[in-house]
Image (spheres, rainbow, N blue to C red):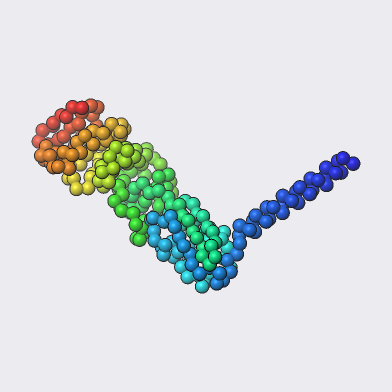
Length: 255
């Protein structure tokens, strides 16, 4: 008898559980009937304008969208390569879309083709209307000829470039904003080129924080056009405790 009651109770609990799941499923896919939604409002977008996102999701003309669900709208935005997370809610005759976009670290060149690369090493396409500017360009990485949009590229070259970018941000944002190019030289010593400064910087590999501090110490002289720096062929940061400025002859600047 006790077993019989146990089976009945188990069946009732199972039915209740299924009912809850069905309720949550259907309530989360509430239909937006034609004419209910007159406007879509997007927030959180920095990489593209509202109109670009709406065009990609085919929501730029609501008169052509019939019996949409909130789930479908969410899915369409989640398919955009720049979007990491989407929140969708209905507010009267308005659908409110809150986007979280992927963080772009740099532009990476695949031969001569430029792509964005995100903080988690994902390669993203560059659209003509993207609003990002003044990002460092990473070039001459090993195996970049194999990459394509939405691939992940996390080789030692790209990791070193990211370390340089992070070290510059932590040390001096003015230096970071001036980094125009990180030349990885296919595994060789890395060379930095800075906007408005003709002298290349031989950065080498490793000890990014120390080298960036040395560069910061010299920064005012670089910007002011110090004659020693202005007439030099390059600045070399590869050596421990010294910075070499190569002109007609090598000059040693001790720590």
